[in-house]
Length: 324
Image (cartoon, rainbow, N blue to C red):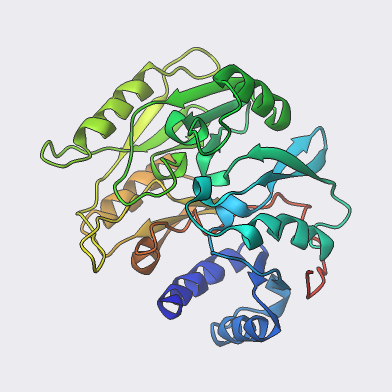
């Protein structure tokens, strides 16, 4: 169903390139020309995007893309191991993408370090000030880093990511999610004192107990000043199912923060408008833009999952066209 999904990509590319540059990993030269044609048809200028050949198994760049940290006034890329969400899917090409992009010159002279630790970008959420929000079901899954205890995992991530405080959620899941509970489907920082999260108020829904437990946990968390977080519940869309009758993990928590805007997944649902209005209150200085992610959700992810932000100053002016 790539043709359907490409329409979502074009909507994303249009919104992103109005505010910042875009890097797209393409399978090969013919695919690169195909993508260039799609962008041109959407009137997206060449100088706003960079198309690099870096073959992939899948399209979830949030999880196989490089993670950038600030080291003082310098940037540093971290290339964690990607194992297809604990060995569920083929991942050999995806795991090589960060290095392929580096080799293509996408990031100039920015150093990139390979890390012998399994970690997906969708599994962590940072407030940008030393606090990491995550789920035990994902980061402590036996299929990720079984040799590390909780204390060892925290020590390693603290050292690599500059994390000073860990907030662990032990409740919360979405049916149809095959990531073992990525935090970017459940709860997100809007600023260092505000967390937007998925709430299910329907007691008959199979998610009710798990998400109510997550909500109770969030209420116990404190920010770096020792105060309770401002918790903002996001609406619950009506159930979405695939052709086989499997429920899909539709969530409004999978939003993407970009320059001057927030891109929010929508699902042709009555709750879409409420979600957009709710997030507008969380981001009063940013434009809130809905992107119909109905095709994406059929592959069990949404718009945050297919994107990875790159800090200002990281993307080279003229990355090479090819990666090896």
